[in-house]
Image (cartoon, rainbow, N blue to C red):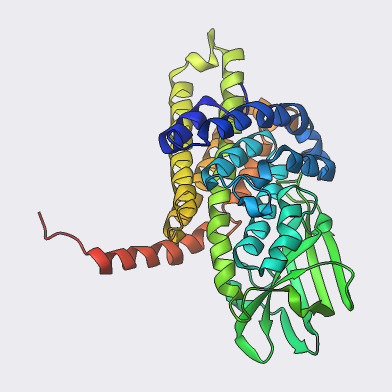
Length: 406
């Protein structure tokens, strides 16, 4: 079975069959891109998980395929394709190697932030290189004491002559050990309610340390680090957008990031489903193939139903983003639904395949370890279900109300 599957083709056909570039992009996803996943990404997935190793060379080669440039405009060498295609590709990438795919997802969030809000000079300085994988990006929002509560960040900056001086610590920053560009959020010491964004590089004046975080439970084919800034001087032209608008930018980026997690989680769920499906055709139990038992049929059906639902929600949210619509609710719903189902699929794949699935050599158990991160990343599901989605519910109720009792 290929990594870009027929169900994805059908989902994209429903949304884009009449688009002028649909045939070309579909040919890329089902042809060169799928071959790249088959030949370069999937074969090393288990070893990278075991060794907790991020393959920078493969990441830059992924950029060479054109995948990272799909959703960007031709002003930076992109194809200007709807975000939906990029999410379909990310889903396939996550099926092949979820840890590696997470690196691509966060890289995309950084790239999107600079492309959407940076000055024309910053966009040209970074985005063409990011969109081709020549540079690697990361998104520095989370801190030791502020994850879902992003407004509690303590990293600060002050203005000083020709620079902004950063002080503080960022934590759980994906791609940081390999990154060339750091999208950093910091609080203004003279206006604590104002948060600004900066495109930061290494080796400017001051102290900037990157400390690798090891022994993660899952997504071990990505690399993660803590960042420490001490009197680190960022040139003024590295400010992204307007001063004091960084939190707004970060929320926009998180909405896109939640869509990417929806696609990523759907790919993880598809991995668990396909590996169980193959095992169920090979394993004999009570004189029958495992796949012929009613319980296995029910489990596989539930897995497939949820995968289709997560894919549909994610692709729909991605299309809305491409069309410039507000996607906070749709992104959150897609992310929660897809991530919870990925955990379900990972757990059921282990349960139905028994002791074999529990062993690392089966290459099944890692999908549960990977899937658990999807519940946390880009806003914990608990936060989305008590704040982001309820806020959207209330807004819709105030706008539309409900009919009289019927």
